[in-house]
Image (cartoon, rainbow, N blue to C red):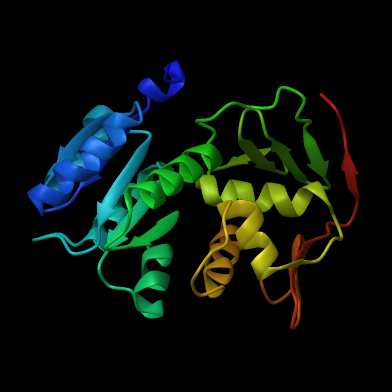
Length: 242
């Protein structure tokens, strides 16, 4: 029997190729998800506004409004997870998608198993999967991270993060002072061995720093370890159970 939580998860599939869109919808419905469809940017934005899906599968090449612009408009007001779907496989295209606000990026053609795995991974990062009731509040200097409520506060002010940014911050903050390579962060946050450019971590770190007010030239929280990766090291780290 399918998990009841999965049956209630609503996914919006945006692609101007009707056959591919219906095929993707069939894959996801077989897994127990509820699926909406849109063929262009305006319809996609209207569906996001009216129906509030828990995940958007977004084609990069759309007529009229491009997928990148749709992602930017969604991200301007929401943290809805976005999985970008595209036939354009260059590193530049991939990084542009992440900079526009995509949480993940899947290159066409793809297998149904890979699609479903990526969807589940993105939803898991967004908190749509089972949560560990034992997860403790992380308080590290002025930064507070609540894994159960999936909330981040800096000096008491709530900060809106995407699901990927939240998971990236959580992984770093769970072990203050530990140095993570980009590959380790990809594995920990994305949940699979990423076959692509590890600079996607740099893009997300840059976005995360902006949102938590961390000056990259003199960071207070996320430190760059040259030639290795990143670590979280505020002035007075500590962890407190709720």
